[in-house]
Amino acid sequence: IVPKVGVDPFVLSYDLAKAWREKLTPKGLQLTSLAEANFVDLVWGNERPPLPCTHAFHHPLEYSGQKLKQKVEMCFREIQMVDAEVFVCSALDEVAWLLNVRGADIPFNPVLISYVVLHKTSG
Image (cartoon, rainbow, N blue to C red):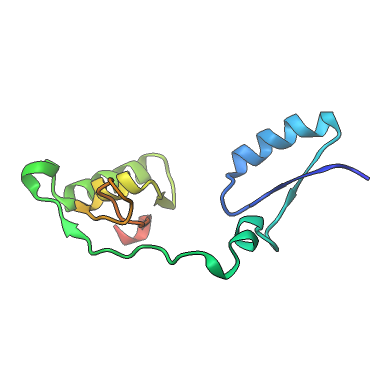
């Protein structure tokens, strides 16, 4: 029986999984996906509180420094420069900066639980 290290494939990047696999394999350990049963979700059960959902508000240009359109155009230029198909922004502070929005989903942080996906054909 090979000892296994379980990971949630929905939160672990490919590169990190590859690096872990390279370190674990020589030690006789196998990296395995827990896609079927996320242990954290199982522990929460039905008692997990809902995600917050506060209102977003516009962050004025006088503070943001650039319009949303300018920032998105910069992203599309970068997408083209690196010949990418899609840009995924999942860092909450970066989403807030890019979209010039603020919120209160996270206590003491002016961000929203949000993500941005820019596809090269949508620019």
